[in-house]
Image 1 (tube, rainbow, N blue to C red):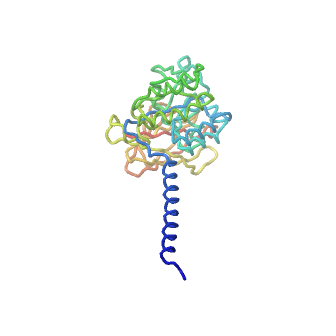
Image 2 (cartoon, helix red, strand yellow; image 1 turned 90 degrees about the vertical axis):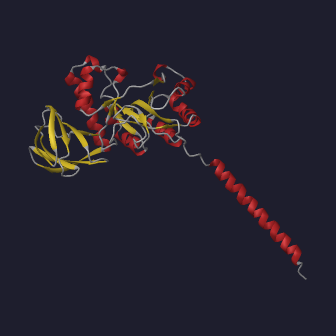
Image 3 (cartoon, helix red, strand yellow; image 1 turned 30 degrees about the vertical axis):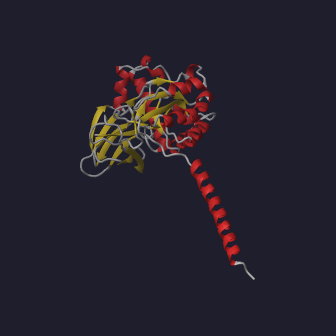
Length: 330
């Protein structure tokens, strides 16, 4: 004869045990799940110069992404040319990519034409690798002058220096790099480099320190040079009507002496695109935009009511390299 009371008691005990296991598992999952980022104290700009390189860039990207960080990578043109797959890996990992000159010279000791070549070639190779030309430029060694700033302006680049120097280039250890990052405040930018193991090892501690202070890693606004939210909308010092835009080139028809290109702008409807040619190229015609010419090799294009795609015909004069393009809001 079945003892119904005993069976009910056993069933209840079994259900209680199952419930306890489920609650424990749920609790364990909850404890292991990272907390949502609290960015109440603002945003800071993490920057890494001199990449990409085959020895460390992939490890750096893994460290940043696994710790929930995004950063701005100031690449040299030579390294970008030699490691185009790593430039694309930077983009695909959600990093922002800036221009750090072609060969990392002392730019202020060069002529205006040499400066322009250093910056233009880097714009072009990053454009070719990622589809987007940089909008940010960091001068090597932080050395700048009025001539260089004029070249930057012609190319639609915003010069970015730094508020905090990690000193990783000067032999700083991991603890010192972490300590330097601990000084960052809302809107500020820190200088670090791609190639040092000490910097790589500092990433988890930098991430933990930022979380403890309710700071988040953000993008650097081309309008202000300050770190802002990744969508560009969190900095009250940005001008009204702000936002970000991207200009992307696509190929059109080509002939023996010239070729057509289309440039499509996304993100905003009020924009200025800077198109930088490689000498001795010439623009023969444009359509669906209003052009102007700050210099012989630089054209700026504004919308004329015909949408966000414009075109141009370039006489190549022996140089088939696509021009670099960059976009800013107007």
